[in-house]
Length: 246
Ligand code: F6R
Image (cartoon, rainbow, N blue to C red; front, side):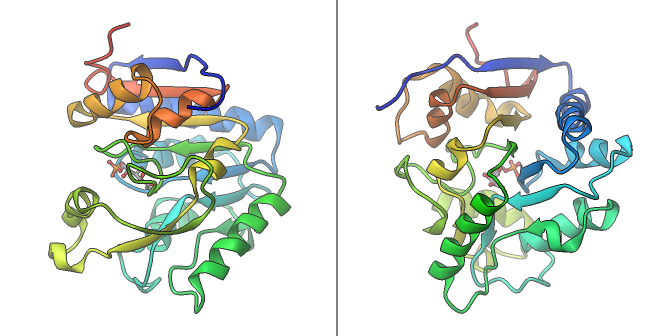
């Protein structure tokens, strides 16, 4: 694999609340230094506690800009499981973020490929991501970059792995309702963030966490690409850290 490998900073916490609090603390410190910071943000179960702690901190997001990692393709924005709806509940409606500063790919754009190009351009125009918060899938995906994704890939339309659709079916009435495609920042986009915070919680994430931190970088486990980034902090609860050797 191309590029230098860097050791990831790994912090392990006794529980999910402590891990989430630490993630919020890091983002609050950044916002105190740079109130107009550009934040890359995830959805999913993992970051819920982080958003709660960020809101509870009372930090102002009035000047911050946010870019979400991904969005389902073709799911109406108003659907409760769209990532836009998720972000409204988790953060937009609970903070002083300005709507014009909240960016999330439009999964209903008439030309999704043009939407992807414009999204990349908007990140660039904002000066790039100061910090990107990530979760990790059971199969090692980051964003919706599934195993086999190219490491120089940019924001694009992707097919969701069946295992990812099954994992996300818990939010829908049935597996059939889970969208088959999404727009996601690419691994190339992700690796350009100035700092990356990866959060993982629970024993079911332990194998992906072990591979991400300890295996040689391989496209079979997209999260191993993070070893090529010089400023990655991995925040784990004890269960997610259980299979780490060091
Ligand atoms: C979400 C995202 C995904 C999730 C991952 C873990 O925006 O990009 O990569 O971070 O699927 O999801 P949870 O946290 O629900 O286990």
